[in-house]
Length: 441
Image (cartoon, rainbow, N blue to C red):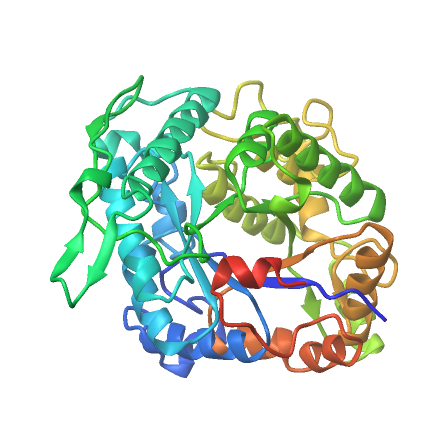
């Protein structure tokens, strides 16, 4: 019997113009309205997915990358995913939703209160994808921190948020209608926090969480050494970026588990879910055609690849000489190690490879069946998932794509039945909320 896997969806372009630049946009969904996202969320739940993570970027970027993001709507505009979450909860019953939240942008007290509210409204299905972006600091009148200092701030932020959530101690909520007593004020923790980055007082003006449901689920995406240490200390789900072969998956999981143990936690406290963006096609002939077509990208294709990477990296790569290496110091401190490694690709060299070589690797596609890429049939994708579950004890995957019905159906119509026929994908949910769904098998 195959091992059940957790599946989530990463809404990779965020709450913005869905389908722009593709025929999908002519379906006439209004991306500003909730309907397209509610329809997609219902279908993810029907498919047996545990979690929807919504990407976000607070800023339209630096002046040099502004045209790259706005002219073709690749990285902006983006509306606030935290405010989209209630609409998604209203459309579903079991699916967890984790908007991306920048720990530097939300004061801890405000964050704790809003997150507690959403946890109650959703029936314990709320999560937070905690990021440490520093380039948006200028929009909030905050100093731009170094990469590691931003993680230090996020650690303090989460610790205070959690203390606020638990500032209603055991027995603080009474709720005795007969006696008329709602709460026991003596059991509230009116603490004072004076830290390096935040100064505030408790208790929180929000009810504690239901017994057994736990706090909102914390997701983290960092791939640097500091990011992995943060995950080991704070996270319930690690959004993992790594090469997807058995040895690399085992090694990455071991690093996360070691980080958890170093913080006195159990490895099983963190679900390590690897990000993947498969291209699911109907036949082997179609797979071969798509892979062959990508083998010799034109300069126009390479520039399109660089434009997309520039938006993600907040670093304009489109004006660079294709036949020279990346200039030293081209990336600022805001660009994470994991993001740079993802750009360079497996087996590449940041110092020695030319821009053309780096972009060509990103443009080329490989076959799932060969282990060289992610183009394949639904059967081949299921083979791939099953193999990593058995050979690397993998927890599951986060599929990256737009939250658009066309994208979902293209990816899942044949894939869901194939995964379920092998016992890899859940067919039902319990009733305990997101945290319970991540722990129930």
